[in-house]
Image 1 (cartoon, rainbow, N blue to C red):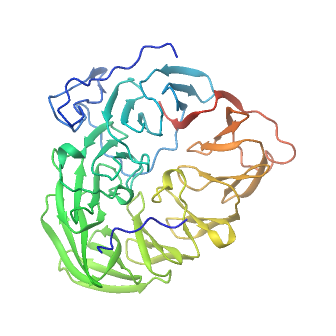
Image 2: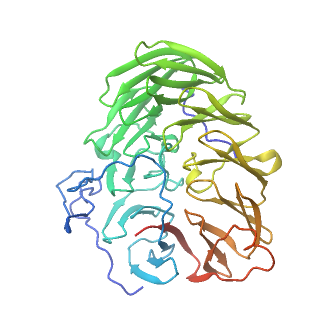
Length: 480
């Protein structure tokens, strides 16, 4: 599937959860909601006047060192697309709780740890699945649904159609941020499909193509920061932007407060990764360039052979740059060396990887000319598995096991090989650790255990799946 265009070319019978609509200012949501945090057994819920950034109160919650989602799960979360009813089942399929909500005509939903974001065409709702607290914001949501920034799978974004405004939620903490209150900007058009984040997901850099600038939204700041140029890269301390003029580009490295840390001129740039001593850049022609933070000098390195460079994404551990070209994909490590080039491949666009690669250990590529999936190890660039596919793909959180639909069931693809499983039903969701699948079969949802061993999949398969009820519900796995 082709990559999105790059902005780097300048040219039940339950009590309903309440919501507070009375304290909103005109044209702005009440983002005073603050997620309840348990501190020494005491739950503190804090709401302040007209502040839009929900913050952690009490306790020390360190930022995650990796932007990958957890592989642990013990609950299945189902949300009804028509009524908004949330049902939470355990790993054995037993119903644990139901939460009645005011959501109608559900368009999309995502769960990160204990936080759920759900959107309808006119509203965004953020739930704490532990406390059942909710905040609802009126917003005409984009047809893109819920997105996440490249570089982290921990932050959820619901934007307006045309992307003049967005609501961001940090999944691990439940903190919320409204761009309209932090950075009201006339004519803004945020490119949230191509937003970048550091691994923690707490700092999100996005191009505002309406104003030819980049904007940093941070859950650790009460105000946004603005930078000239288009968003290239971000880490916990710095951002990198580029201003293209003709075939040349001025690349600048700023700290988060806006002070210039380095600046250099090179050919037009399409991908970047911040490293200890500066920035690794990739030009439109595939040349790898290092920009020194100390001197601002640029030094040329190897050249990729994957065609015209379209875009680049930093992996969720912050140590690899995944580069997409017109005729292939490549991985560059933090030293600026090429770990691997994979011709005639592009990125998978399923699940977490819908707009950018976000798996923790393996990169999922698809080779369209042969209808193949290719699994690549991010750490060393080696090809782990290749297999033909004909249906939709699902993958584990680490990306190293794939379930692909077939005419008679599904196949499991990993470093251990490819195993075919005869089991009717459409694939809906794959447990993050690969231990279970959600299948839709005869208008019912089934939780099916997964065992990729040859012994388990030889001969006729026993139907040992667990019925989760009727279809028409979106499904997620989480740990509660």
